[in-house]
Structures are given as structure tokens and as C-alpha cells.
Image (cartoon, rainbow, N blue to C red):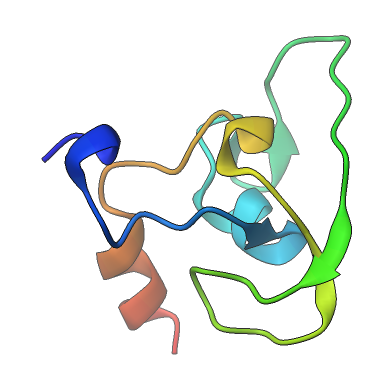
Amino acid sequence: MSRANDPHYPQWICDNCGQNYGTWYKKGVYIGPPHHCATYHNGTCGACGAVDVPVTEPRDYGHLRAKWRTELKDNR
């Protein structure tokens, strides 16, 4: 299912989830565009559920990998 059609795809994610499940990170190393900025606000992470943490849109991490849900469950 594409993220556009997935009602459970998070609108906001925390930095930890972005680095762990975003496509712009590989084994903890940033591999995205050399110049990128993101705007954060305090909220709830739609992936891990962390509350009152800085969150931004998943696109700021290159969107989440296709198997992010499985990876998240495996890391809990």
C-alpha cells in the first residue's frame, strides 16, 4: 500500500524514528541531500507514540522505509 493510501502512515515523527526508519539514513549515517532543513514542533510521534517530543514530517527523513512497522515492532 502506498503511503498516500495508508491511513496509518504517520503525519509526524520524532528524530529517533526518522533516523531509525527514514530512507535518508543507513545504519545511523545520514545519506540524504547535502542541504535540507526541517521545521519541528512539540507533539506526539505517529510511529513510536512518544509524547511531547520534537516532531516533523516523515518527508524530512526521506519518508519511512516500506517495512518501518515491522522494524519498529522488532525493536520494542
